[in-house]
Image (cartoon, helix red, strand yellow):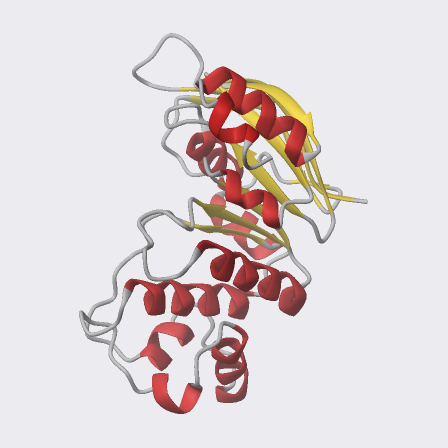
Length: 242
């Protein structure tokens, strides 16, 4: 069963005559990790924002279904209530507040026990982190884990992660991907993992390649990554890893 289905999605911007996305059709199976690959400027983040219904485009055409229900006409907060969640590449900063308060910000009905469990799921000891402040004393890796803990508390049906490994040099990539598998296990959510890195193949069940706003290949990760390598001129490098 597919948890997310996109049919003929096109996105028009206010500043460009050519569409940012052109007739995108895509289906993501339930409880899968699906990689969306492509170079910078290919339309990956545009697709994420369009799925969430964020109003930064002139026009969005096509249909989007979540768990079989059409959400294309819903405002972004209704899509979030339906179980669609987007974690931005650069999450909002909440400097100086306690980790506990940050984790409750979007989930005030959650119990302390649930908050503690979310931290444990991302490898952080609640007794050490609940009272810590979100400030410069936390490493990039710790911030990323806390952000992912907040995602777990949202209990999403479908989670969009926009370049979650961007700028991270503290968490080794395979460790980050282990965290994503933990989130899938904890929430039962499917994950759309937006990336340009070949390492996502360690966890991706399927993949699609965006190129200049068009979806040019979908299927097994290795086949999609091989096509990406051919187009991007990284053929020799990729042959060593795929």
